[in-house]
Image 1 (spheres, helix red, strand yellow):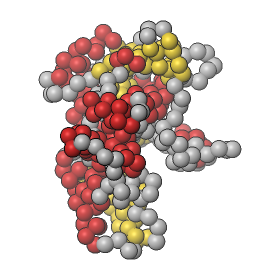
Image 2 (tube, rainbow, N blue to C red; image 1 turned 180 degrees about the horizontal axis):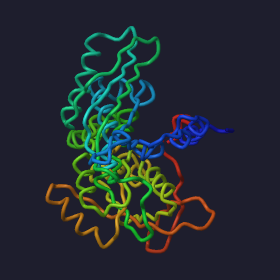
Image 3 (tube, one colour; image 1 turned 180 degrees about the vertical axis):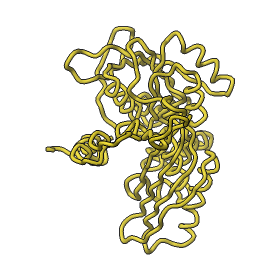
Amino acid sequence: MSQRDEFGLIHWITGQRSSTVTGVQQEVDVVRVGIGDDAAVVRFGPNDEQQHMELLLTVDTMVDGIHFTDRTMSKEDVGYKAMSAAISDIAAMGGIAKTALVSASIPKTMDQQLMYDLFTGLDQSACDHGVKIVGGDTVSTTGPLTLTVTITGEVEKNKAILRSGAQTGDVVFITGELGLSAAGLDWMLNREELPMKDSIRKELTILKTFHQRPKAQLQTGRLLLESGVVTSLNDISDGLVSECYEIAEASGKNITLFEELIPIAPELVRYGVLTDQPGLSWVLYGGEDYQLVGTAPGIELPRIQTMLYEYGIHIVMIGMVNESKPNQASEVELMWNNEQRALLEKKGYNHFGGEK
């Protein structure tokens, strides 16, 4: 490859290996959904006709200097966020998170109290999400702190919500406010020392909390699955546009987002005024919100909204799924004033390009 891209690299590597889902011939294939979605869906065994559930498997890694720094997060925050980020993949399948395995590569120079704080954060997030830490591995390293969390979960047989199910005419919805995490990171890295009124500074600490202590939307994911009508689902880790592209490409569709329907949190509006940056850009490309974006038939959306509202959960329509053009790549576009359109650039955080 002339230019390394995170997702292109994954496709290239797995395409060369005989152990990937398409390359292994088994008498009874226990893998129902392999590489390419938020989590793998695995049958419990070849004789699972009587089983009512399937196994969900996902893994997530955070590296010091790439995903966090001492300027933006305490070690307790790092542990909390690493666990939440991994659990979020289970939420995006409509699943139930069950257990966690934690692998930590810890610098030899790291203080013992900081190690304790790290695992305290992991434990807090696990408890908050109803997950049991059942094992893992800890090694010393001369490199940066690296934390890998593997989550196992379960979902009803053949019911996992995939990225690939979006249908032409579906509405696109999100489950909460976006952009707050990325704005919080920007403030901590670039603007925290700016003189501000105490009232505004207190308000902006909300942005920090969204970045440092995200919650996986497990209950929301389960309710969306129970509705029985959600056609696709994805968690928002790399940014709304990036996740919409994943749904569009997996489903072979195009997506149109409507600017006037996309909510922007008051704190984000205030931050945009202070920094002369449009809040919409944080919403579209910010990432690390760990809310959910999904699709469903438009006629079913009011019922889903009413169902979730009873649990204090608000979902908002922000777009539509359209038919893609023959022999052309899937597209995600933004529409405003009911007629003006612009193709949204397919970008988010790229580990091999350093792009945001």
